[in-house]
Length: 580
Image (cartoon, rainbow, N blue to C red):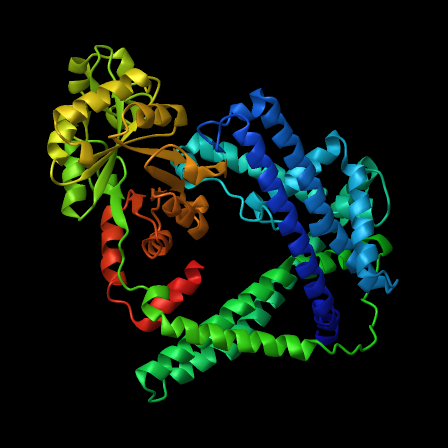
């Protein structure tokens, strides 16, 4: 076992150097692309492209140019992030002496064979589909790609959608396994893309069981080794720290020290994960072709004079960071949680959806605000409803715009009446901030004008925020009624999103990074996170700098907030590091 791990150990330094160099080059490339895209956006009068304004991408020359440049950049990224690593793996396996520079050149030139329709499909699969499956080779740029929570919740609650998505993902998985060695065929065997695909299918048809077995063993061994490192360098020292009779200040410093060391280990593990996995895949590729297991060539021992210096620099850096964080402990690891809880659809899971009873339940659990959805009836009134029809909540498949107020009032949602916007305002006045989403086919300028008028009639300008997934509508309200509070909800965006014309920006969980939230604050605006329902997600965002957390599980979030207020130093440090 140990002799099989030796090649991976010997490759660490070369992999590290390659990762650092390429990550710097890629970071520069992405920065320059960002500046170019921003210039193109500004030329159209926009500061960002979002999920509420995406059509522009396909209807303007600037948008089409952004798509083409972005697609080309994916090709470049794959050349650097995967193809070059395949060449490096071949060099280490066969001992052909290919240098790092030669590996980069060979990997880069191989991307020319992907400049066709079939190649675009391969690149998009690697960039967008593989991350969803969590299987095969991924590029680091999109490894966090995901299906937004608000979409998965709909899929999981609708059996037909769930079956359809499961079948689709299974089909993608089968396609991915069959074409697992397409890149190897193109890069190593110099085959045209079509022939590389046929070769991959033949290999995997015979060896797919062994590949899955080897994959499992590789992951298992990697997990055991990482667990051993964590146990030796973090858990055991931490156990000693909290066993010895140390002063609180000393214990705090040592805790920060070992947690910082753990963060550095995680960083290095992330740098090595993909290259070492590709090494294993390349070994299996040659083994499947030759019919026998090929071992990596034994490498000569080389002196690396800067290794000890580099390690010393890392250790010194960890110590310096530790003392700085200890000096500003309360700022770095805050105890107080100032993130407000906002109930989704009036009361979340604590009361009937979009009803006054739901609002009252949210208020009872300490919510700062409630999010509701309003739509216009056939006779011009505004009532609460999320879906396009009342089928799910009240068993009536008509839309609000097909019904009169009297007909809507005859419906029951878990025994509760469907409230009007006015009744909702009355129930919230002096209690909750009402985040009112302009929803459905009737979400237009008339709805915006009417909503502003009604809010002003109740004198609740400071207690209401008008929100929407339609940026044009929010931009209209903010420009026409600057005295009103507005919020734009987005689950995907590109550009200077924080500069959009609104007071609040609602970010879907995965896009609500600390950088994104800080950028919003730098623009003097507030950040909402939606829709956070899981305990770990709520803990993460309640510990963040967000201003509000929209959730269905209001009671759980309130209990989490209370729990966070009683954390020990260790728990505060762990929360911060896991958050990072």
